[in-house]
Length: 407
View 1 (tube, rainbow, N blue to C red):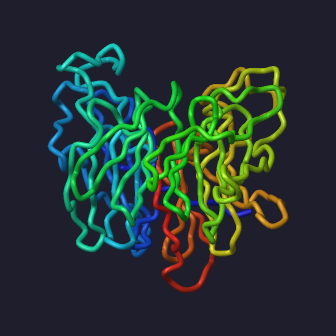
View 2: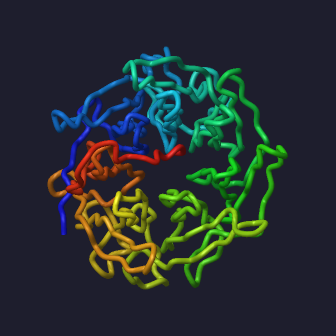
């Protein structure tokens, strides 16, 4: 089994999370270095430098968009599943999210502070990074008063689709007009993922794990009779989409939910009027289902295809029986699993580590670079957070295509 190399983020204050990692249109790996729990904390866009084997800081987002971190208001503290690559233009889009208290504040409640003009979150910001010129092309106010949970790009129509937090609305942004509109609320629990099919239709889920589909051809946003799979003994409540990756041919997607005992699923969006959903089984070890378990431990994410056609994803391993008493001192393991889409066989492929003696099992997102290597963005304890690289021993360049166009 391979061992991944960990690259900690080196910013001040120490970043506590990496919520977004994606392959850029240039085939390089971009990640968000986030301070989501630090009063006055910000977010940096970093890129893996494959010539120096290190991380380069590209953008201090707060400075780039003119939102001072010491304003006292909730800050632009993270990019949360909201990188979108545009191969046609070379632009890497990124939208910001909320959670960090304002500078000098001990805590932040987006609901309690909604009407407080001194402490509330002003807006999500959309930033366009030009990967050809290595500079910020432009930035714009994105979602008023709310953060962007996840983002998807329709390159053909020049549209971005987003889900907002706190109100869980479905938004459409016109890139040329720099205008945004809401199609209404999806539910009470944010889906963590949004994706498109070959027809340009957009898919996400509501709080009950039911798929919601938008068609740009009809302008209709609708719930369809398809549900994200969940484990026996549970209900569909909270089985929202967490991470989704397209198959290499784009005919189907593979995904996992944000719920207890997550199951891998495969969805064929163009098979019949509502598509076809398959439950591919649990991604984690067996456990006592009567015991409560932390979502931080019981987590799967970072789905990415290798050039070999195999699916890879990050999972956690833990000592048997510690589920209900979990804390950050427990010796967990992060494992990259290799899944064969043809046979359904899976095996442990690589070990993920974090900081020495700490936990590195929580993977948010993953990507494949121009040399075919795999990268995984991690939330680690202790901090700082960072990302890991798994060398795949491929030959050649430009091995990153097709590029994922959602966060």
